[in-house]
Length: 255
Ligand code: UDP
Image (tube, rainbow, N blue to C red; front, side, top):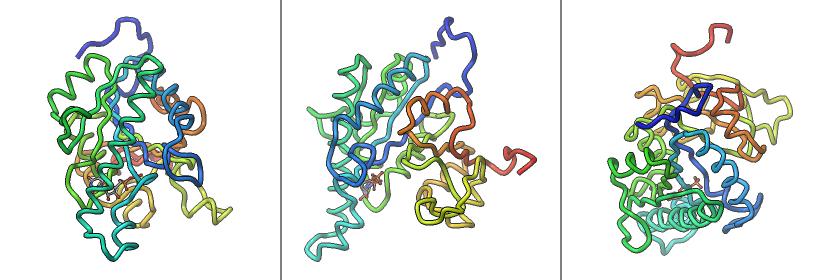
């Protein structure tokens, strides 16, 4: 893998998967796509790429459709079909993100887990790695390509496949709390927590399947607020932003 001789301070992460939920593509409290919301993320992504970090972005689709909610709300919908619709929603977001990134000069490739020539390349691991090595941001859409799971699981699986050093889960809250910080003013943020404790306490961070994948392969997860300008870079610079979800053996002794 090519490493720039210009980077003076070695960064803790070399290859990163960023999971962007569907709601990062829309304004707070709204659905659909807001290009101005996407642009705020793009500007942060542009700076990350300049740090020579290899970045793959997994897009969610909840701003358009989540299979589970759609199939339970509609008697006419077959659950599998609803999940495929959800996966296609992630491709719409992927296209919007690609357009926005390229408008600020960031080279990208869109790869889809469901084949759709003319719109996106198929996800091919080795091709994905090659793009990353060439400094292209790879946008991963259509989740895993299979229904009944979420894009969190897709992000965990892709992190494993491409040997990512960390999975960044971008959210609108500052990390993982003991309780919902919007409902409980006494909720406290964890700076570090083990996968096991997240599962034991049933903290709503990621679906359990995604957590299990990360736990089995020791992929650290950082949950952080992407809306605070510069936070993605701070995380990648090793600053203690948000919550790090870690193997028990890597938990700091004091906590
Ligand atoms: N989905 C799926 N398989 C996958 C990934 C996603 O069936 O591998 C469907 C699922 O219905 C999901 C929807 O796509 O609800 C949108 O993804 P997700 O809910 O993870 O989006 P987010 O919550 O991140 O916006």
